Length: 309
Image (cartoon, rainbow, N blue to C red; front, side, top):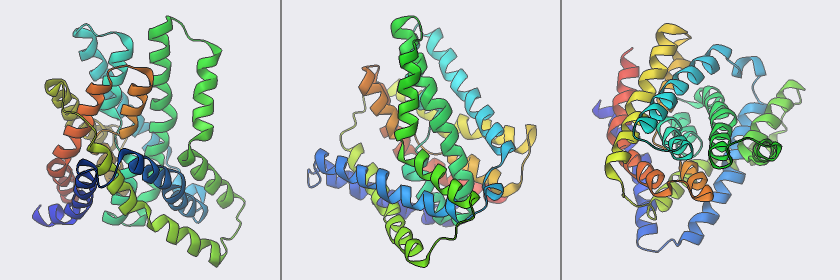
């Protein structure tokens, strides 16, 4: 347990360094936004494309993992939604709380961290988890918010979702890489070196950007944030573990990666969606901050438990 904690500690120290830079204003919010853009559009995309382009699609795609992760995530999503409705919240606010409870920071934190902790072989399962989060749940929250506000769904809502998916660099890079692999086009050495160098910036850049962005987050609504953090850090990985280890059992390694991904703190894009639609942004902000801090202890515990299986 101590060894695993020490292995994960450097990742959180970089997040802490980013937090200090943002809090002290050494790194302004504008600088953080540009660093985030660099990581999102270039570094992480290069890492994803390089991996997807160099492995056969059959080695990446795992239908049982997709089904199991989707089922486990939907379980905690529905639980958080039910609790929100019992508290009298409207549909859009319940959707934001459910998103906090079920969607982790897989892209910025999980992808680089799990690739280093569990080797690059973890990137394949992480890409599948990321695809489920982006395609299913990022679309679902937009549908629920629009339906809650307008009382109905329109064609423009689905066009908005489609444009969002097509413009998402992670979806684009994974799809382009898989197409490259399917066509069996060899990756030239200079291109591979370019992608390796650029993708190498993903880990420190993403972690620093997470910390710097946390500096602007508030800790309001602590009780709600604590409940949502508990859902994300404890109930979510437990649900995914139950499904992938017992209900729809899969191989040990991809199951480990998916459960570890489920144990990550709340994703930063939940706040961006909440702020964009004006639905409970402070609630999402507090959940991101609290879950990220708590994950310094909870994530190593989950990894230690998985290692003992």
